[in-house]
Length: 251
Image (cartoon, rainbow, N blue to C red):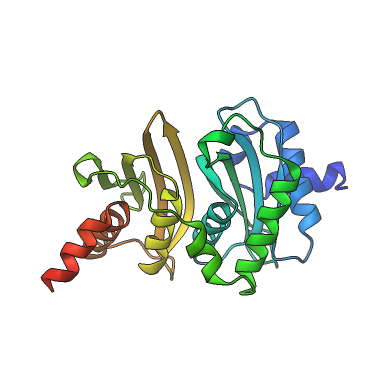
C-alpha cells in the first residue's frame, strides 16, 4: 500500500483541477491504483465518490497518443458505457508522463443497468486494456463486440472550438445524442487526426452527450485554423457515418 507521503506526492504531481475535483478518500484510492500499477502497462480500480450516476472507475497508464481510444475500446469489449469522464496527466521529473483517467460507467445492456459494476468485471476490463496496449488482443474481438447503434442525426450535433484564456482555440466541444460506443468513435477520430488529447471532460445528461477535449498537435503546438476545420469534419463523420459515406462518394 502507498504511504501517506507517496499519496501526497501523487496528488501534487497532478493539476490543481484534479485536487479541486476529488476529496482525500478518492485521491488515496487513485494513488493506490497508480502504486499497484508499478511497471505494468495499465491498472484500474473502483473508488469511492458521491458523484452519480454510474460506477466510478480510475484507470492509470503511461500517457501515449491514442490512449483514450484504447481505453474506450476496452470498455466497449467489456460491455461498459461511459456516462462521464475526466482525464488528467501526472508529471514526475525523470519519469514518463502518466495518465490518470476517471470514468463513471454502467453496463451497456439495458437489462443489467441496475446492477453495480463488480471488481471481477473491472479485472476483465484491465486485462482487455493491457491486451490492447500490448497488441495481444485480436482486433476481431473488438469488432465482434460492437453492435450497430442508433446514429444521432448530424442536425442534432454541435462541434466547435472555443477560445482558451491564452487565446488559442485548443478546446473542442461536442454536443450530440448519446449512443453506445460514442466516446470510442470520437477518440479514434482524434487519434486518426494525429492530435494529442491533453485533457478531457465527458458528461451525459438524459440522452445528450456534452464532451470537451483539450487537444494540441503531436509536437505540442496549437491547432491552426485549417486543421480545426479538418478535425470538426472528422468528428462529425465519427458521430454520423452517413456524412463520411457522402464525403467519400463525392471525392
